[in-house]
Length: 442
Image 1 (cartoon, helix red, strand yellow):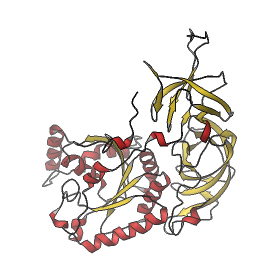
Image 2 (image 1 turned 180 degrees about the vertical axis):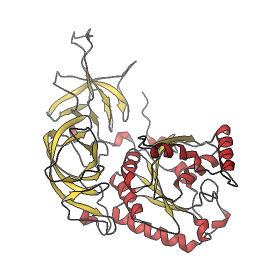
Image 3 (image 1 turned 135 degrees about the vertical axis):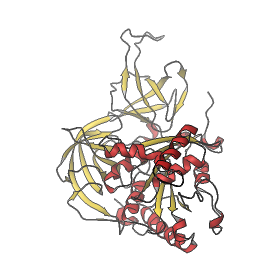
Image 4 (image 1 turned 45 degrees about the vertical axis):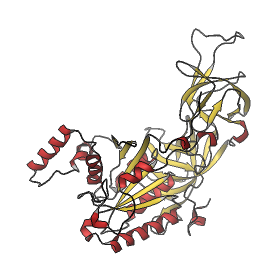
């Protein structure tokens, strides 16, 4: 089997995008413009769009209507966390998670950005950086999204003024530094007119950078799995009813799941956590073949050399770099429930494939979005980003989110209703090199 790294290609074939922005920043129009100008709208869709626009007395097609259907469903009470759009260019395919802009839907931004390779954030050139802008940037930093592109929209309404753009870009750079965002890029656009979205604008001749589409077509998004530490959360134990036997007449027993990170090879030494049992990989199976090597994010069945008690929720990890199981977590969370969180709340904590009971042992503070620092707080309210200390009923193999995006994330769940209460990240993913880094350091 030939192992291919990300560096073998100019760009991967798929990019996961999430869009975010404050209300009326023009996000729907930008998404519509991106789809329209990249030739990703079917002819019958375009005809229907133009007909509806004429019926509304509009002089031209309202591209925002390409996304208004799902928004209307939300207003009717239908639960749709994120609307997904699929489109492609000659260079790359895209999955776009269209997140709503209202502050009460910050939880939807968390959902959409949690698996994103990049976030496209809109800012109105007239309004500049708002509190909701800071919140979305904090969420992107919290979730360790590799790339953030800020479209400074409605540049036509400030007469394509360079200084207006530069002021907003400077404010964004300051916030990004404070939050420790590794890669933030800005581009002046007019979603309504199409300037610098897909085609370069002659009306911003002072801007020499790439268009929005050029940026997302060329972003590097994949790390080489061979340079990551192997992690494999067990989802299911496979033991056929009519048990197959190998050459040594042992019954077949395998452990199914998705490789969270890294590479696994037959013969590798691994450890099963939280029990701490050492063993080696005896075989790697798929539905129709047997492999000698597999890498993230492939779903496989692993066979172990030793008969060890392994169950759903256990973590099979490289023996040379295994995390230390713990019952005490310090974490940053985005609180997603209308009910406030306070000390001594009892919850369920879901980490990879393991769910365990937990208690909030302390609320250390909440993120002040203006000062970009933690301030003391006794509880967290809806959409707050805060810092907690959590005690779990049983050990979990959690790692700092800044180092391991998959095994450093968890959910807090209401034990009675099953409602998701918070998205959490172990350690302090917002610590960076900015002036407030020490205030985020745990």
